[in-house]
Length: 277
Image (cartoon, rainbow, N blue to C red):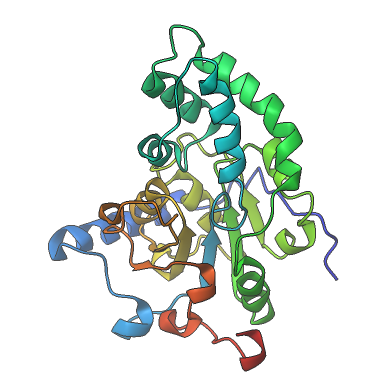
């Protein structure tokens, strides 16, 4: 029975073979450069198969983006400015420090509020809001299904560990189904998305890892996350906000309106039972 407490693995086995992963990532990137596109999904091409899944969290599994938007609107209102979607796209998938820097620069408030001051104010306000966040449609069904079918899953989020714990307070049992969780302030994650650091760290920590990136399917809602997955040599499914311009869809292997629309069999994964659909 799940304990309700998610397992956050911060320090991997030092014997992990990172060179193996980097070799396969380079091979994957060479294939993409030669063909002009990523390999077709395993189920469609008949080559290999997906054996492991990695999920992003914010905006994909948890509806936290609306909460961040609320706080950012409050801050900008003090300077008679508004928050628009073009800026939102630049912030998606970034870690706290990077998003704060981009926010104050792009909105033109850096003369009045530093990135660090904004980050601290945002954090204080979010401490109250984050524990209230809800699951996104289809998240619970998909995670429980994959777990029941023996598919090993990991979470790779740019959120710091303390923020992850706030966001998952109401959903600990579901997140405990993950084999492991990699957070943004993990000592092995030197760079945020679109760097592949988060996803490569997650691949190394699966049982018997490192797992071949070509056998991993990543779920993301942000363009920077999709690029991070592709930079890691993995296949990627994009579940974007409907306001995201379709020009940001191109890098993804598959684009869905919702996790409710995901068909596991398309990727060679165990299909949903009738009762689950």
